[in-house]
Image (cartoon, rainbow, N blue to C red; front, side):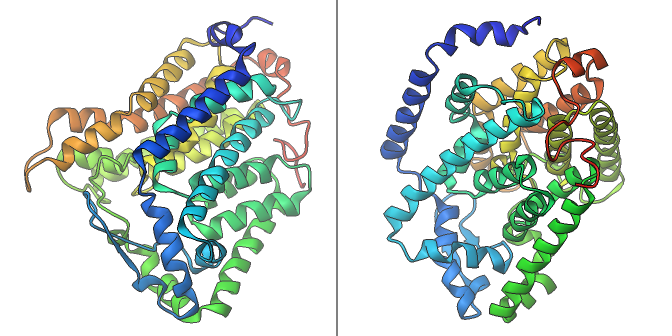
Length: 416
């Protein structure tokens, strides 16, 4: 089999993959100790969750410095029930445990990406998994997730483990449904189940999600009514659409035009273009049995079309980059360019740099050109990825990679 340029470049590193991972993890730990990240999102989970037992979950406010001076609990009440045991621990222990869980989740995401890519036939191999995990620790969406103590990596791992596990339709669907019950954004994973014709798993995801809502309503009826009747659509509690941290198409357009485009003609036109590109990529990936291509298409489309997609939501760049590096279209020039673009965008930490520029703008000042243009960075990389998935590869290349859904949960798994 002809190796891609990426594979040839990393081949010498494979012999030292263990040392690479150990060094990366050690550097990560030293960085955490030296910088002392506030882990403000974890602090919200930690401090607010006990309020679910007294009907005061959504009254909690965390005050801190920065562009956002306050943070609220913005997830469904079921999430507070999940975080409740964490709040019983001393803060230092909870923060350390969360770092370890997030690192383990990153390993699961990389490993499951390989299983999806290769149809369950052994994945990427231990050495490549170690190389990817060591590198991904320094990609901005992953790094920002660690710094905030966000739940994205854990939920992403739950979704990916669920859809790759050989445990039947109930397990696959339940994993997606429970993840959506904690934070609504993983619900987009249900489209993967639909696109791959896993009807029973889709049904189980709906049952599981409904179960999380029902359980939370039983335990916390006041907070549940408040969330589902009022707060679920309140974007003001989440943050500013025009923040550079918001890398959705709506956020990028709003910064370029100087105002929130909302759902006007420009906003709908951009959404239609993204939906068309995603729809074609999804059709192409399903047609050739490219399971990882299906998943990254669904996840990236969800991030692009969401009103707010903070930079830490873009952990799905990890499986996208794995697809670009090892997938059926790895030899195409577009895949190589897109992989390079993702690498440059995430490792250079362009979004945090732009965020600092935005924070120093005078009130009411217009956006500088670098904020408007470079503020498209994740959205542009995602659109290029969708085009690359849509372009795909020859059916012979697909068969060569064993992508015809021969393992449980694959494309064409049908009624499983």
